[in-house]
Length: 469
Image (cartoon, rainbow, N blue to C red; front, side):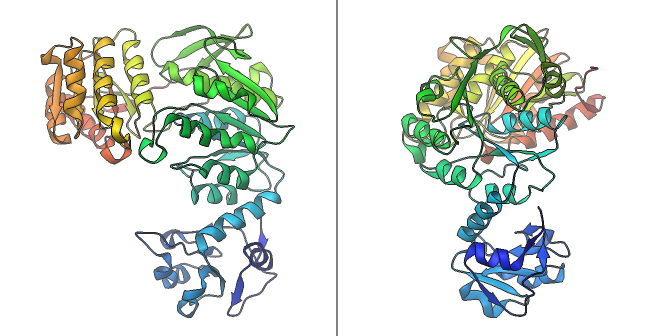
């Protein structure tokens, strides 16, 4: 973050100064967690349903905060010079929008039901090999995360890959209005958060809000492999590039092949490599290539940058654990991403055994049972050698698998992770490819710890899969 004066901040949020404050003094870091405050920081006290950072103003002061942003009703509690506002959450968005107006950074906004984080990190990995820039940290993609992502951009950053997420209609529009991206990527529209959206059409309308906030000289990049995204082509005011692996596309991948951990494909007679499993990542790679071209990079520079991409933990990242290849896709799950997981296992070359450990897919509303049964059918038709299900919907997944011909001996219903670990201990053998996936609240990542412990009992330590250039 570049230096901002307290006078600029006060004006941006239409706040009121409280206490002794040097208005021309500056700060260059905003922190919302009192435990992470560093000397010189501005502490922003957010209030939510489960916590209230106003209760930690003294702790922020002890850690070196020089001032704070608080709500009018709490000014008497502040040991620091303060800027008082009606609502600190809303003020954070207002300040981030003001700060965005001061930047010359090229913003790439990325949204979609699935694939946002992988696409964002892929774009960052490719561009940052040639151009200074930044990306949204972690899963900073909502009404708090996006402002903090924007406020982390410095004058030296020529680009920023910013992830935009929504759990209800209208949220993408609000975030895009704040971020003002010059480029926008829409990865997919699939059944996620159906409990709040109600329909796929409502999800599509929300994701398409990004297009409304791209400038006329901007660029929209749409995943043509997703029909609901492809249909958005006429909604943008700017240039549109459709990318994909089938049908009419402006950028289309051809000659796709994989050895499991490395995928190769051809675009316009040039071969690219993606060092990550899963054909569902190819549209993300194509969107990344489109961004690279728009930023003036050559095919060689784009290809070199694409090779720098390594999936973040929990997002289809393959590791070798003992004698097993383990695909850590544990961060979240939806019907579309579970289908991609089954496809990834099905296509994995040379596996002696293919096992999926599936936790519940949450927030699917009234269609939850049908989607879980369909997952079982997909597992069976993908010819998996083992399916272990954890959660309230486990029986529905297994029913779908049985109905589609998967032997009962290859199915495991587990009420908790401990039982899943016991079953894995029986099923895992040298040459097994294991994929672990489930919704965030299922905490499927804890099973990876168990798998590492099983491997340690049998011998070899875990190493990330890396390849020579």
